[in-house]
Image 1 (cartoon, helix red, strand yellow):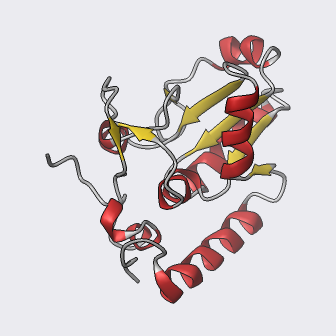
Image 2 (cartoon, helix red, strand yellow; image 1 turned 60 degrees about the vertical axis):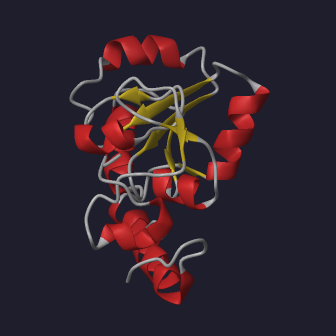
Length: 169
């Protein structure tokens, strides 16, 4: 199920189809937004998009979308009351993880707390990277990188193989 460089192939497309179906059925009330819509909104209204990274620290340390806040896999590091007040001035609160499952779980939590403009970014950072969109080295870095942490060997098949990094130089 491994992606083969740019494009990933048929197995990657099947894996994405299964994952998107699983996410939609597991989180039927979550609103989803495409990577293209997020990128467009970030350009149209700089600072108007709050990006929440719902991955493990090891994944964050490899790369992240510029401007994202690390909130932990279950949003445990997120101050929800503070976010609720900040979210009123934002056009979007976008949750992402590797493929969209953990970020959908976070979006459910945010919606329940009254953050009506919280969305899951469909395909999350894997789709973002596969499309060649900019990510920067995590862990406080500002250097651009085309890579992301593949999470594990199963889900990593949805990330083009030339974009895999476990943090090695």
